[in-house]
Image (cartoon, rainbow, N blue to C red):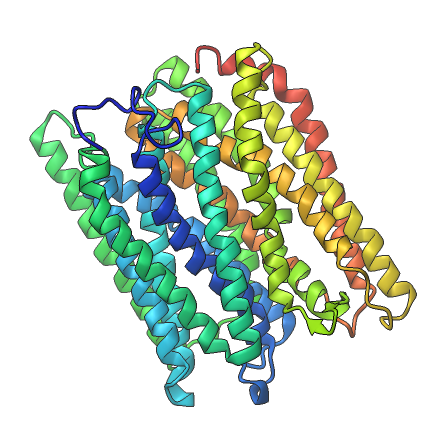
Length: 511
């Protein structure tokens, strides 16, 4: 973006700043790679060795997918912190894109490496993707927020458009990699995901300077040079130390010195992550130098964190329980063509693309008529809609159980479930991203974006732990997975509904 044009006055990208177009494209390709890879993981790891997979048990494979997805979101916290304290938003995004591309390259190499080194290369690739996404994901969203210094409903609309870019990449990625992975070779699918990320890296590298100007280049520096130098040294030391520990654990696991139990790790991580969130908020309340209003708004962020985690624990069953249900219990025959099971993952993205402009226009139109819903109201609506989606899956699972597993149910059960989950996501996710940027104290905005993704991290862990219990040999478990999820969502909706009025008072003055 030209520095002579204020983001508030720039409406050259469909009424929004043109920098949004670059961020849209970069995130689209990054999500192409991420969502293109993700639905293949549980099927690949659970596939027999003779079919080119790892032969893992389903609960183990599902737990690994949950841990991987959780770590992707968890890495957003140190990723946002390092950008706030030393790297700056733009540099963090660029480094992240390079790491993600390298991760996909490592996964591609694992397909041609020998049996002894194939698995280490595969898991090394997942680790690199985690590190890179932690740098890219929160900081690109923070720059989107910086495009709208005036705040208001236009920012919410901008995030909805940005969210449509995310899902455009997810939709295309899952169709391409799903077909290649299931019909040609697992590693052809993995390789296609990597090519998408390379396009994202190239687009951001070429477009950042002309389209963003100086946005995202600077960090909030302490007036005291000594304090600032100490902050930057802390970032460097923490980064080196953290990478050293990670490398040690990886080497010990790859060489078989340490045996890792994915299900036990996932369960322990859930408690650890919740503890991290509580400790972070306790720290900034006690020692963060917040004003009274900043404390209230940070309290709202904590409440939204809790309910977002509940939502994601349901929604992120897409690559585990819902993916396995599509593979095992869904009639995928369409005029003689067997639809790849991974293609059902694209249904959510297709609905996002279809309804994102509708929701963006809806929020702006309601604001103009002074009928705008508050953020907690939108959150409660999102939880309820997702609950309806999983309630539908209870009926579908019961049909399978009643037939003893001999009947494949209509794909419309999954499609309708994804529809309600998508409507819930549109009420909650882009609004949550926008809320983090407008509620966060300025000096903590990157870290608060990390907290938002930490909620998704907790949700991914829970989803991974329960998602592997969809199994043709244990039919009775499937309805219980879906009914438990639906009940949790409806209870959360009721609790948040009671809290809407006091939360709105705490948000007084926020545009």
